[in-house]
Length: 328
Image (cartoon, rainbow, N blue to C red; front, side, top):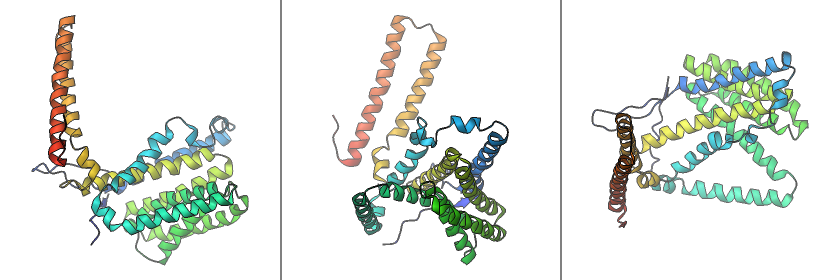
């Protein structure tokens, strides 16, 4: 069985529209939308410099070590990316094609975690931290391949950059790795120059350079004690980028036929939400036109109940017709 078409064209802002027949068009992720996320790199770099030389580390002393300590950070930036990746596999065709890889990955990860837990100490946490770092920059450099001409220099840049980024992060706990990691970072920066010069477009050159700048900022943050920014910026860029691709993929994959089981189950939501919004607009006009006495409040609530009841019945009927389930 051939792999399903992903339909993720990368062009030069994230846009979508509908055709004349009402079928949603393919979402295209343009390079400028991806590059815009990297604006955090110079902004946070400038803040780190200003705090070091002007404000005597006032900002650093008030920040937690990691953004994960901030209320809501994980819910806003981390979990949507994770849930979106799981959501994609609620697709019988994908599960049948990638079954062996998924089973192998789950069993392999479970065995590795069991072995590391048996070793005790910080081995498990250290490996989880290292694989997270590797994954974060490997995604960004992987996307950069869209803008690069294939070759040994491009491949060498990618893996030296990812290795350096991972090594610098792990060196927080294993300091002996820092010198080697910084040497790799220097090498990857030199290689990046050649990759930028051979990029297939100006936007591609900016994206590759911005990805290398992200690794440099993370290293500078670790070395200068700004671990908050060293974690924050790569995390936001990585998670938002990944979420954009997952949303584009799921939209394009299911725009004509809903292959995804969860999308079929939740198909009634867009219509229900739009009709609820229409009711809210009518209620607002009603409120502006009249002072709501007790009797009129009862009338308004009755209108809401009728709208809600109708939508619930429609949703139940659609669900039952689609899945052969009778909802009373």
